[in-house]
Length: 152
Picture 1 (tube, rainbow, N blue to C red):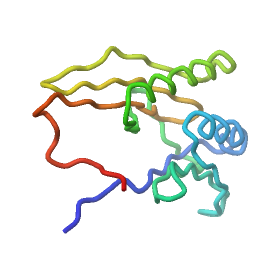
Picture 2 (picture 1 turned 30 degrees about the vertical axis):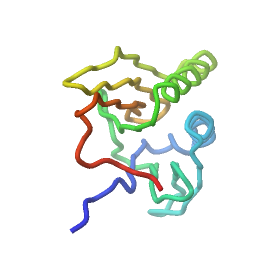
Picture 3 (picture 1 turned 30 degrees about the horizontal axis):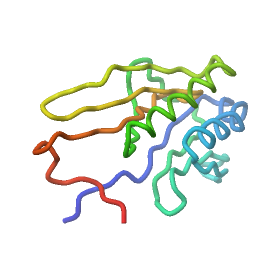
Picture 4 (picture 1 turned 60 degrees about the vertical axis):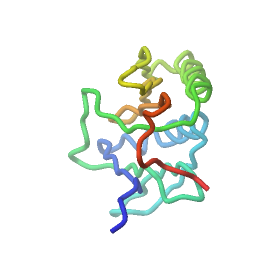
């Protein structure tokens, strides 16, 4: 049997929030992550689909619900990048967004080093109920996992 892979995540926003902030949410995620933002009819409403890559089936679907997700803690979705430079460049773009719009939240972290594994990351959130954990993971010789994602 094959191992599951990330396909999508649906996030619910309070009634009216998506209608009010659709353009801002789309612009932020398009600019910062180069995601495609698509309006999609679903559940008798128009949801917003944030697709990470047009060639894959990975996306976040935003809908409005009477009982929406509330995540006051550190709940997050991890986004894995290949290099420190990519993560640092995204952090700089996020900071620029934050200077223009104070609703952009950023949490910066020192590198986490554990047993030959180094995680270099920051969290960012904008008008969504969860954080996006933007990170890269490097492995010391002999610390590489037995299985990992490979894009061909």
